Image (cartoon, rainbow, N blue to C red; front, top):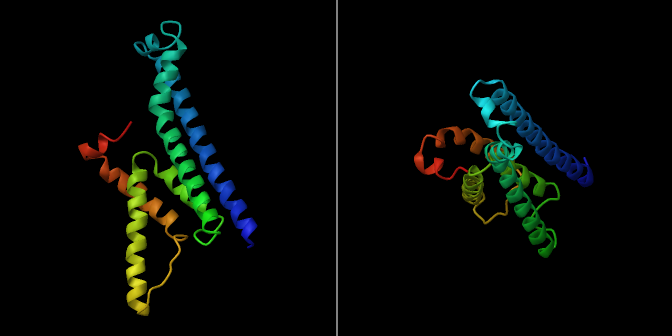
Length: 172
């Protein structure tokens, strides 16, 4: 597969994941509205008893904000890594690797993206130490194969971390 095709597939994957998260947030927002509207007490939380702004603010903070924040952070890291790669004349990242970084940050969500980056760098450090010990000389490794598996590890650890109060305080 050529470089351009890999990059195109990575780009499509990133935007497809973003679209699926947006569709999910829209679906649960609508489901919440319908549930409140059908409920005997919940109907007082939707129009005509309350403004639509009340529900929109609730849905935004409960269902959309974490995804928007993780998307903004993914874009920040994407463009930052793109600038850094361009500044270093393309030796740091493969073209599609930037999308893998953005996908990892986005699907990890907020606040798990903090742990995601720590896990990526810790896994890279361990792999670098093992490779250096195996070959006896300093080697250069790429982050290419670390971005997505570390995102999966972060998502799996996320359920475990929710039980701690300090982690719950990081949630929006």
